Image 1 (cartoon, rainbow, N blue to C red):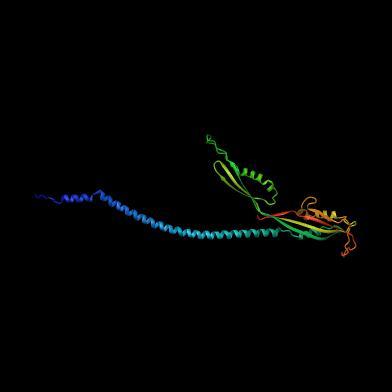
Image 2 (cartoon, rainbow, N blue to C red; image 1 turned 30 degrees about the vertical axis):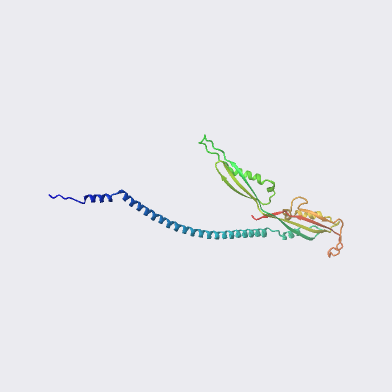
Length: 293
């Protein structure tokens, strides 16, 4: 039987050993990882660049939207101001002082021998600017016992306590004389130990209307001036004046002028030779305060 001798066996084993070298394999794996990492980083860079461009586009769009929103808010504020002024004008038009009812009421004030010669009315307004009062009211929350962990925490009725505090504030002198109700804005900030109530009390801007009616008349009775007081009482008894004039003697109606001696008016084509006592009665209407609610 022939014997085969492989003269290249040692060389082939050495070559096979080189192929199986772990260091070489590790270098190949490391290179593959590095190439993959570089490719992944490049991919991320492309994504970051794309996202950054999208972000810049969105920011630009947001700035444009914000500019448009500011214009819209400005227009909305102007519209609200116009609507508020329109509502105020409507309220003024529907609640303003009318002189026709005054003439109608005076027609019903008939006293023998008393003649009304002139009527003079004045309307004045006094404006008060808006004022704001801010304060903080703190309520301590009841602490819960650490030992009685099964007990429920006591709930604090902050609304009732705050209402009582606000009542004390609004009963002060600077608020007690208000003819228009104040506006109260409240916000709460709570934590585990206390309740903090931020209160803002607003006295709205108001315009107070003062109306005065002056009646010049003559008393032709015998003797002259006999029924001046009766004429004043007749005005005060009319429902129109009773509901609108100040209450109290000498406040709503008062005798402003009265002659001492009788006079004659030669230019009076009705009673040129009849003596009379001229007098003037002032009627003070109740003040009306109007606000832009």
